[in-house]
Length: 72
Image (cartoon, rainbow, N blue to C red; front, side, top):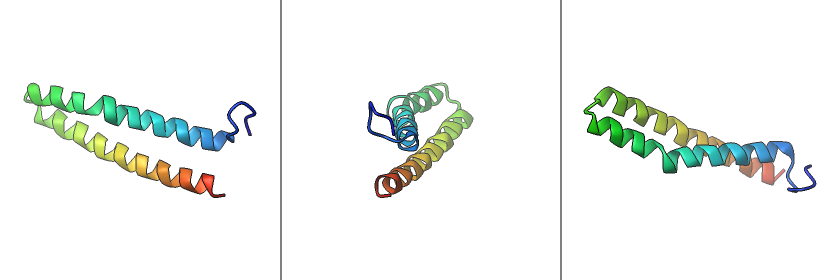
């Protein structure tokens, strides 16, 4: 347990990873998709959309892990 945060390391790790995934999804990925669309690069649009779906699954997994960590 970290004295400064009151969190154990694994809970902090989950929160940190969740924040990074959320930042990418909310601040970055749609810009990448838009750029690819503007370049008429459908292959890249598909790639960014697949990555977006993967990251959404990561967020779901991390939320579940956080829930378990909070209730242990």
